Length: 432
Image 1 (tube, rainbow, N blue to C red):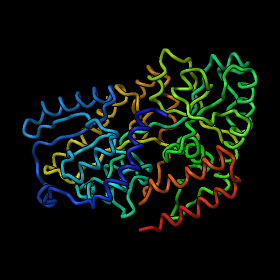
Image 2: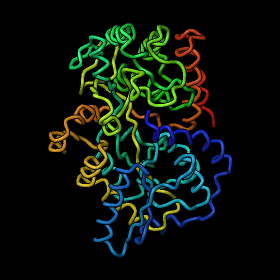
Image 3: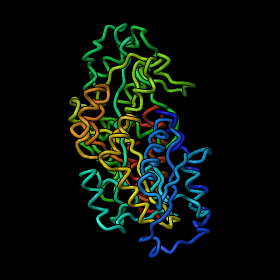
Image 4: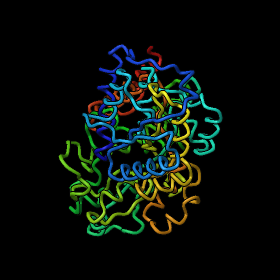
């Protein structure tokens, strides 16, 4: 998993411990009724990723040239242990900007509970704008009260990267590798390790952070279940047949030492220690010149196919924050920055997929020129998000603890472990 995501997500647990326990009191109260229709200068934060900084600066400059009375001041999210800790602390202090790009969907329930977010439904036509832009996927980003506290912005559909050089050394096809079904994947993994082309077939982080399960379990559960979330109708559903199949698949990989169980200090895929990695389109730039790669969908029990499967979204969104005094301008800029033209700039500058309908058709020229991104784009309209429920971080941590104990280290039976984990999570769902 990329370091940026790890850093962002890593702050959520600390946010729960620090931000919410701080009593959620805001230093500066803003008159929401006045702010809703107010125009004027605003500030925004965006990621410190070099490509996103370039995108943000370009967009802000264009806006300011056309809107001298409503200037936007953009900056990178201030450096700290994590973006989420910074945002959580700024909510408590009442110092957050109007808009923050790269808001993690998993953090939205916490920020909402802090009173730090503005419901975008407050603006005329907002819900329709969001739903028209993102299609059916927009529903995943509604909060339990039926409102949008985040605008679905960009997605990084998770897929399997493989190292062609290692596959060739193991005598495996580099153009059509047998990785579609669980049995094919396991056979391929055995060939890689037996041939000593690489020490491990795949090496997802085996550590216990709650977010690690988004990449090993959740991407494959989305594919196996046809897009089901971890929780449906306030009930944990992952101990079903799909979840059991995914868990048994990973348990087989670990039991046969085809996947690494110990923490790796570095990038096991870039270093050639592992032949495969679970990644999003950001990996194209990261591994450019380092690995001759190929990409396929995550496997399922019956077989996966590009453009016909679900996977984890790894999305980052935009939220409007409660200290914003000129919310009408903020809403106008939010629409401006997620227009078809701005999304095209985002795609060309960062390689990340705008969370809008028909990305492949809308930006056909880009994908013709950059065919490496086309496979990811084909998955972009069938991505599954983490459930938008209270106590989401505690829920994922509970799941990870159970997964580590049973699937990775084999210290408890997989079947009963999933069932027990679902029962524990049902209690967290009901926890006030």
